[in-house]
Structures are given as C-alpha cells and as structure tokens.
Image (cartoon, rainbow, N blue to C red; front, side, top):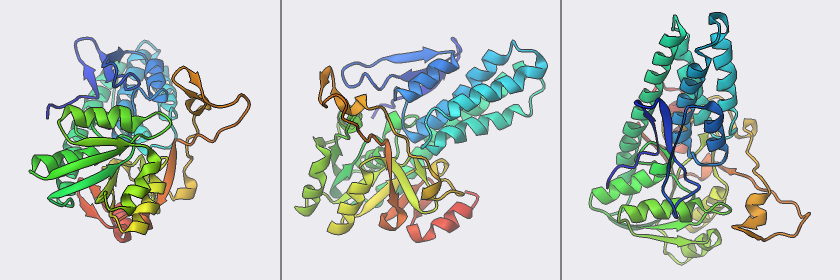
Length: 344
C-alpha cells in the first residue's frame, strides 16, 4: 500500500500542497498555494476535508498568515497573523481539529522575536502536526485492527481514510492495518449523499490499495444489517464531546440500526478530535448550501423555491458507541470522562 500524501508543505516553492478532492475519482490533481484566502476556499469547498487533515491545514494556514504578515510593521505583525488565523479557524465550525491546529501553531509564535523567526517556528510546528498525524493514525489503526474478526465485512460512512488525514487514515486505517495483518476484510462503503465522499473517495482509496470494496446507497445499510451481511461499523469523527460523536450526517442513522441489530459500532479518532470541555448542545452543526441537494451534476433535481435542510454533520450519543479507537488504545464510552481528563 503506497502512502498517499493528502496535504504537505513544499519547501522549494514555499507552498501548501493538497489533493483537490472535489475532482476525484475522475481526475487526480495537486493544488498549491501561498495565500490564506485560497486555503480557506479549499477548506470550504471540501478540496481539503476530514478532521485530521483540517488540523494540518489549520497549522499551515498560520504559516501562510505569518508569511503574509512579515512585511507589516513589527507592532502589527501578531495582530495581522491572529486576524488571518481567525478566518482559517472559522472556515468550518463543527470539526474541532481545524481550530486545534490553528491554536497550536499560534502558541508557538508567542516565543518569536521577529517575523522571520515566527515563520520558522510556525512551519516547524505545522510540520510536526503533519508528522504526528501520520504516526497517530498508524498507532490508532493497530489498536483498531485487533477488534476485527479474521474474516469480516465492515460498513463505513463518508471518508475517514488517507484523504481525510496525512497519509493512512482513521476508520480506513483500521481496515488497512487489519488487511496488513492478514485478515480478510471486505468493505461496504455508503455513497454518502449529497457529495458522495464514500463513492468518490473511500471506494477510490480502497480500490487503489486492492482492498475489496462495494458501494451502496446510504438507505441500504439497515437492510444489510438485518440480513446479517455486515459484521461491524467503523466511522471517523470530526469532534467527540463529553456525550456525543459528531460525524458526517447519516452516522447517527447507522448507529441506531447497528444498536437494533446487535452490530458493533466503532468510532476511530485521534485525541486531537476530542473536545474535553463541550457537550453536544454546545456545538454548532454546519449547514451547507442548497445547491448540494438541489443539483446532481448539471441537472436540477429539486423544484425552484423548495427549501432544503442540508446538515453537514449529525451527533451520535456516546451511549450508542461500542468503543472509541484512539492512538492510546480502546476507550469504552463509560470511561470517556476519565480519558478526557487524562493528559495523553
């Protein structure tokens, strides 16, 4: 399985490089930018997406902000950087990793004595976030692989693979590691309406790695559970609060079906996706544009004037989760408060 770098820094050109995921699977293209505004557009358009990848993007966003502000008067430098960093932080409200990456790199700038040093410190920290994500996903996946039977069919939703991280993945990382361990794993990927991240991205990743994958419509999953064709569900997470898992809308539906049919429901996420101070009620769920539902390609599929509810995420109570898979091991929902209060 050849590593797939989703987002990275290109030192010779001084640019952030990322796969434009809106073009997959039809076209593979690496975009690059030195501009904070372009990175924000990429985040909002889902060219860059997935909680861990957004954490890395947040870190690189601060680097770009520091580079852009380096020509400001010394007394205005940090003010300019913070202002631009705030726009990166607010590009998408639900995933906690984005603000986590921004804040982690911003803290490093407080130790700088000049704009030039600030850029150097910011880049070093952003690169550290990227390296740590790769290692974190590998460790997380090793723990999760042990939960899978030697032969099984796994349902997953949206994309929590290499494209959502640095290069290995969370939910798909567990599957990759299990296959490397010699387990026979088949994957059923929900297409994940309205933007088809399961069909476009998850299926593309797994087929690229030679892993058995079949795509279904989202509404097929419950029936497959009822007929015994799914052994477990593994999803990623954009934020895990003290009482709920926020992930791509449709996740809660799968959790309800899994609970009813006695199918294990696992969530794979790094510690950086955990929010130790908030509950479900404190989190804003992103609502996206009507056109994502009203159009399918170039075809209009909704009568003019009819409104939509296009939630980007939903929340699944932790009580419905069998286990949380982290780089530090397996966490049971009843132990979440102890995990959140530990230092990691």
